[in-house]
Structures are given as C-alpha cells and as structure tokens.
Image (cartoon, rainbow, N blue to C red):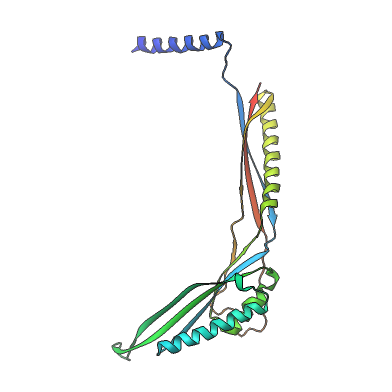
Length: 234
C-alpha cells in the first residue's frame, strides 16, 4: 500500500515538473460577488373584485350577478380604468341543498353565482376611490390588491452598477489582505431581480358603509442585482 501511494505521489510530482519545464502554470484567480439594490415607487396596482349572489331560482341568481358586475365595471371606468385593464378571471354557478330545522334535506336548493373581476389601475393614487366605488356598486369580496412597476429596466441598471462597484471594492480589499495584485477580469456574470409585487389585502366587504374610501399606502418596491467577477491575480 505504501509503495502504491509513493508511486502515485511521484507521478504527480513528475507531471507538475513537466508542466513547469514547458513554461505552463495554472491561472491564479480571485472570485468576488457584489450586490446592489434600489427602491422604486409602484405605478401600477391590481385588485380582484368579487360578486356573489344567491337565489332559489338559478336564472334570477345569474341575472342579479350580471347586474352587479356591470355596475362594478362602470364604477371602475369612472375612476379611470380602461376596458383593456378589466378581465373576468372566475365565474361559477353552484347549488346547495336546503335543510329543515332537523337537518334533513327538503329537496329544494339554493343557487350561488360567483364572479371575479381583475382590475388594473394605472394611477395608484386612485386606489381608495376604486375600492370604495366597487363596494358601493355591490362588490362583496375584495382581495389581491397588488402593487407593481410597469418598467423596471432603469432600476435594474442602477442596482447592477451598485453591485459592480460593491464587487470591485471587495476585490480590492481581498487583494490587499492576500498580498496579490489584481489583473484583468476573466469573467463577469450578472443577474437582476425585479421586485415581487407588494400585496395589500382587504377583508370581504371591507370599507362598506364607512364613508369615504379605505386608507391605503403603496409604499416602495426594491430591485436587487448580483454580480460575480473573477479576476486574474499576480
């Protein structure tokens, strides 16, 4: 076993000696990762407005739901929402058996109609007006209020530049500590991350009868970037 280990060690030594004799030496590199971020103000907000109606007659249940849905869409238009920014994302008709006072089925049913409309508002300052107008029009479910940004490219560029500066500063510091000199950049890879939409959630019927729209705050969103730089060093 010792003889085999020695033979392998000797082979490795000869290989390295041969490479040195040929004038080749493995590259020495320093790899650093930097990060940067910037905050931006949301300029879009989307919200889902729901309507549920109930009636013993399925036709009446649907007709009532259609009437309320039309009122909600008109209310959205009054605060500046374009037709292209309104989209029906859910519609269903279901039935539920009726029971007597003893918990036994009566043979009759009630019909439920659910309709959900997703609305995108391009003026976030009008969100409160939109919510209250929709509730006044008959929406009895409000959820999924989400703030976002239409174009994050400028923010991504800024975050990336900060990440590069951070990586360069780290490389300079590490080179000084290690006693090496930074050479040319061998590779540089970057990635930018757009912000996750920021949610605000309102309970079913929130704001109903309160007078004035519910208080909302859009806050800010953060765009982050990461850069990895590999330097040759001497």
